Length: 197
Image 1 (cartoon, helix red, strand yellow):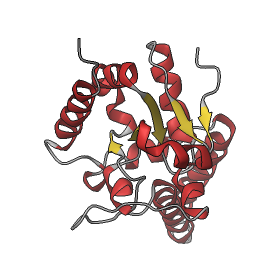
Image 2: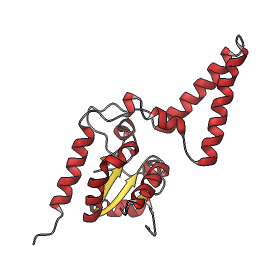
Image 3: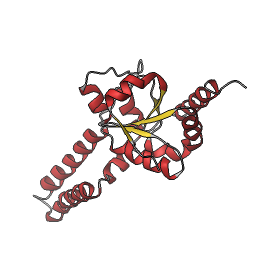
């Protein structure tokens, strides 16, 4: 079990050149700005990437990153169950940028709203639609009640079903070949760091 699963942004910044950074946000969020040198492996694709992550963790310290630290903490726990040691960036990229550290944006990449903002927009839209439609069809207010219940459940369990659904939308999924290219980069990185016999 990983004894200290978090790394403060100041510590990560000082050690950035020696860390293998993996951003577990959606590709759109990653494109909006990520830690320099970070590789994008969305949380939903973590199991597929497990062999490459295991090899990378054997070659260097693995730092997982997301917007706030919640998804990367879940990713660290999942990797820990598989015997892979990783840490998470405390406060995520939100805290990283608050401290004035640089983020990189791929040239020509289309930035997408962060997942939290997408969830707030979708939840608010559904509640508003339920209330407006409820003026004509009384049962439509159940939509608003359902979303409210889902948000309470989300807060109590620190999970988010709506984020899980939104992550399946095309703008939140990697383009074909992107994940394969990232896994190949991690493999090459691991091969370069192998000691000579």
